[in-house]
Image (cartoon, rainbow, N blue to C red; front, side, top):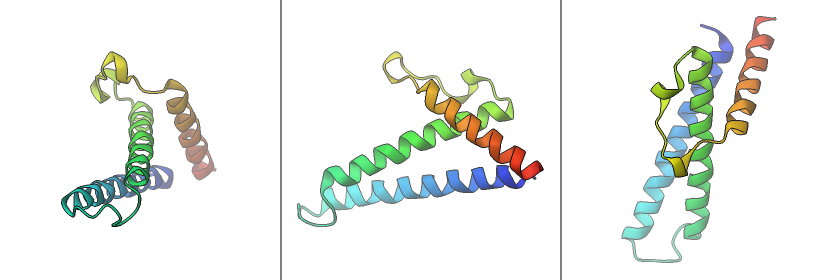
Length: 103
């Protein structure tokens, strides 16, 4: 398998692990009734939001490059459409990585 594809998959796995860890921290913080434990609550939630957003768009870009139909990847609500410019940015990044690995 292409090394660029393996790097993409590994990065997506890392992001997914980070998201799971952050969700756990948020639940732990809510259960522990100590507002000063860990980080400020919005810092954790903001970090989780950023990583989730990045994961979503990278995943869509990777699926499009593999030839998966857009409708099969996700069916977002009208108020939750993905950012096409961000998807295109990741497609360009992945294409450059694959070209670099092929050279």
